[in-house]
Image (cartoon, rainbow, N blue to C red; front, side, top):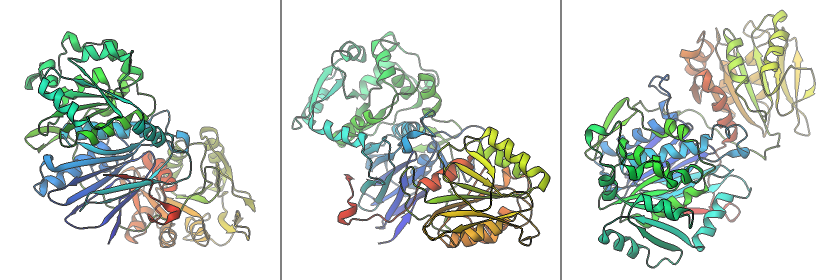
Length: 570
C-alpha cells in the first residue's frame, strides 16, 4: 500500500484508492474527512487558524485552517459527494515543549477552534477527536475505508488523553435543550445503554445557566429547531444577528467565559450553521460547537466531551477574531452558502523530512541559514521570532568585514538567543547563534563523540564569497545522525543553492525565502531550479517554518510491539 506524507500547508485527496496518508503535528492540526459511500477521503494539515486580510491568496493559503479545510471540501464536491455521507476527525493542536513559544498566542487551541467552526458551517460531524496536551501526534488515515489512528511522538505523560480515559468510565453530565418531546425521547434512547452518560433535559439555554453551577455539564446537546426559533434569525439579519432577552449575557454566558461548554447541535438531516447562527450561539456557550445528525450522535458527543481537554479559554474578543469565517468568496455545498477563502493547492513534492528528535534538552540537530543582499533585515525578522529554546543556529551572511561584529551585537540585543561571532573550535550549544566572522568561512566538524564544533577558516573564497553559504552547507552534509534544517534567504547570485541541494539529498529539510519578500530572489531561484527546496515561505513565516520542520520529524508509523498505536478513532 502506498504512503503519502501530508506536510504543513498541504492537503491530499484520494478517490477510491487504498493508501495511507501520514502527518505529524504539534501545534498544527490535521482534519481527516471521509465519504463512506464514495469510498474517498482526504487530509489537510495546517499550522495557523485564520488567514489575515493582509496576506494575498496564493500558494501559502493552505497553511491556514480557514482555507485548507474548505479547499479540501471542494474536492468532495467535485466528486459529487453529499454532506450526509461525510464525517470528520480533528487531531492535533497541542502545546508542544510546554507551549514555550506558542502559549501566549494559544495557537494550538485556535487551530482546533477554526476546525470546529469551519466543519460546523458545512454541517460535517466530527466523529473522532484528539486535541490539546503537551505532545505531538503522528497520524495516519486510510481514505478508502475511513481508518484513522494516531500515536504520540514521545513518551511524556499525556494528560489530555488520560483525562478522557477517566471520563469514559466516570459519569458525564450531558444537558439536552429542547421543548420537543420526540427529540428528547430520541436522545435519551440513544444513550440509554451507556451508564457513563447522564442526561438532563431542559427547555431552553436560560435554564442551563440556572443549573450550571449546581452541576456543570460535560457537554450540551441543542435541538436545531429550538436554535432556529429561539434566535429569530432571518436571511437579512445573518450578518448582524439580534439576540432575544433569553440569549443576552446571563449566568451561563458568564460561566462559559471560564469554562466553555462543548455543544452539539442536532438535526434530523445535515444542518450547516450559518455565520449568524454560529456567532449568536457562541456568545452564549463559547466556540466549541459541533453539529450532528442522530446517526453519528454518540461519536460526536464523545468528541465534544473530549474538547474539555483544551487549555484555558480565549478571551471573548480573541475567540471572535479567530473563529469567524472570512468573507472573501463563497462556495456552494448542499444548498447552503458559506463564506470561505479560496486558494490553489500547495504541494511540496520534493525531498523528505526525516529523523527522530530527542528530548527537549537533547542536542541532536542544527539549523543552518545562508543570506546575502537584503539579508541583514531578513535576519532581523527571523532571529527576533525564534523562542529561547532552539537548537544551535549557524549563519553565513555576505557582509563586509567591518560591519560583521556590529550586526551580531545588534541582533544579540534583540533576540532571545545568544547571538555571537563563531570562535574557532567551540562546541555547538543550544540557544546559540553562530555567525561567520567577517572575511571568514565557517564549517561544522563532527568529533568522535558525536559532538559538533564550528571551525573558522580563511580558505579561498567560494562563489567569490568569504564567508560562503555553500562552504557551510557542504560541511554540514557530512554530519551523521543529526537532524538538519537549512534555509536560504534573500540574496544575489547562486551561493548556497548547490549546498542546499546536497543537504536535501542527505535527508535535511530545506527552505527558501519566497520571491515576494526577497530584496533579490537570486540564490533562492537557483535553488528552486535545482530541485533543492522542500518549502518556500515568506520571511515573516520563516521562523515558524523552521521550528515546525525541526520539531516535526516524519518517521514511519510502526505497528510493532514497541511502537503501538495508542488510540484508534473510528
